[in-house]
Length: 394
Image 1 (cartoon, rainbow, N blue to C red):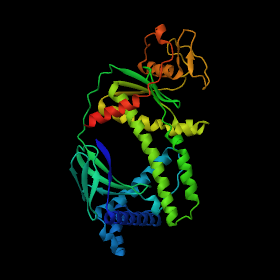
Image 2: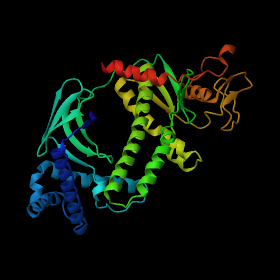
Image 3: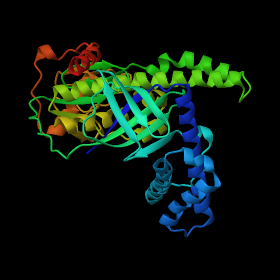
Image 4: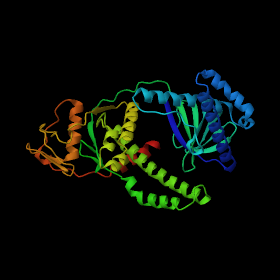
C-alpha cells in the first residue's frame, strides 16, 4: 500500500532559486521529449529516454539538475499519454498533449534516490534534495513505511510543498463489528444529516469568501498583465483561493473522521455530481459542497480503519417515508417530512433513515410518538471532531 504525505517546506532565497531553476529545466526536458515524440511517431520508448542524454549535451545547464529528476519527465510524459488513451476509450473527446508553459508546470520528482528526510522534534524536520540543498519542513505527522518517492510542488500562491510517498506492507485491516450503523444524507442546507438526528451545518466557504475574492479579482484586472503590480495582485488572489480550498478540506476531513471513528457501517448516496451540477440552478452551492471529495475521504479512511461504507441508489430517498414506505412528493422548499403514518421529522433526517434502510435491506425500528418532532441540528459536531483529532495527535 502506498500513502502520500504532504508537507510544507520553507526554502531560503538561494534554495528557492534552485527550486525554480530545477522546475524550469524539467519543463524544458518535458517539452523537448514531447516535441521529439510528435515529430517521430514511431520512436521506441527507450530511444526517447536516451534522447535526454543528447539534451544534456545541447544544454549544459541540465547537468546542474539531478539526473533521475530529468529521467522522471520521460515517465511523466508517457503517463499523460496513457491517461489520454483511457479517456478516449471511455468515449471522451480528447486532443493532443500540449506543451507546458511556465505557469502550467508545477512539479518535479525524485524517484527512489536523491533525497533524505530527517525529522527533528515533534513538528520540525529537514529534507535533503540532491543539487538543491537541505530545506526545513513542517512535519505535522509521523511517516510510516519506506519512502519511495518525493515530489516537489509549487502552488499558485508561490508556496512550496513536498509530497512524500511511502510504501507499507500490505495488510488487511480487521473489520470493525458494525455495532453502530448510520445513514448520511448530503445536502446544501445541512452538509450532512445522519439517521441519528445529528447534523453538520454547511460552512459555505465559497460564499463567505466571495466578496474578498471579487475585490482581489477587480484589483488584478486594473493592472497591466505581466507588470510587477500585476504579479503581486495575482499572488494575493491565489492565496485567497488557496485559503478557501484549505477551509473546505479542513471541514471535510473533520466530518469524515467523525463518522469513521464513531460508526462501523456508514451508508451514503451514490450521487452523480457532474449531472447535478450541469442540470441544477444550485450548481454553485453543489460545487462548493464537494460531495465527491467527501466520499473519497470517507472511503479511504474507512478502508484503513476497517469500517464498511455502503453506497445506495439516491432515487426517491427524500420522497419515500422511512417509517412506512409510502411515497409522497415534496418540493425542495418543503423542509419537513409529514406522512399519513404520523411521522413528522426533518426531510433530511427522513432521507438519512431511508438511506440506512436501503443499505441494511431491513426495516428500521418504529418511531415512538415522542420522537416524531424535527430534531435540532448539532452544529458542535465539527468542533467535536476537530478536538478528537487534536487529542489523537498528542
